[in-house]
Image 1 (cartoon, rainbow, N blue to C red):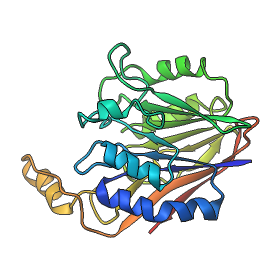
Image 2: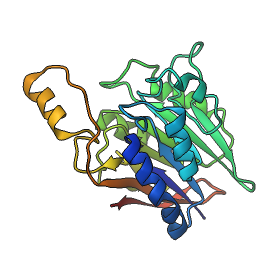
Image 3: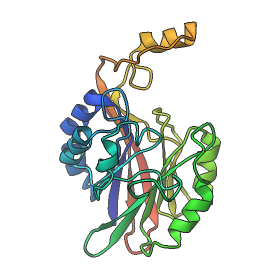
Length: 256
């Protein structure tokens, strides 16, 4: 049996620093074999930069997934050449840099990490259900974990059930609020609607309250500022059989 740690959206400098301070001990205490971190908001403001990506890797991540802010920063175009970087696989083919999935060679076994983005209330990318069928036909390991970066809980639930018994885990990201519906679907597939975020806890999804409140009150453009508040780390730990790809246990974690 092996364990995969999946950590939700790291937000800004504070999130990166908190991850760096906590990840090593989390991995040691829980005997983690593989660590996947969503880093699409890890740069100051949003997006991801080489600096924030390297900070996440130095902290102990094996793979960094992203989402709708993957290409927010121009420098990210080169960053996605790195083997540890994954962008949503359903960006249209032909002109998009990077890869939508990576295969980790762990010696006696391998693990596939796929990044996919929803289209309900999100950017109009290719159909994620059609695209994931295409990708699964190419992957020959039974150990497959999916970061489904989506807004609508209904779309995340639908993807979880669509992939039941076809992948080892489906982890929702993007909304930054950890849900309490972690489970094993079909006795095989670990699932949670949203893993949550890593960054300032007392905030509006990592952003200072005042600017977000003003946006909703006055409907005027505002500059979002990272909240100055104590951080927390949200994630899941999934135990899976590396020979069959079947997940046996998944649990939420919150580290404050």
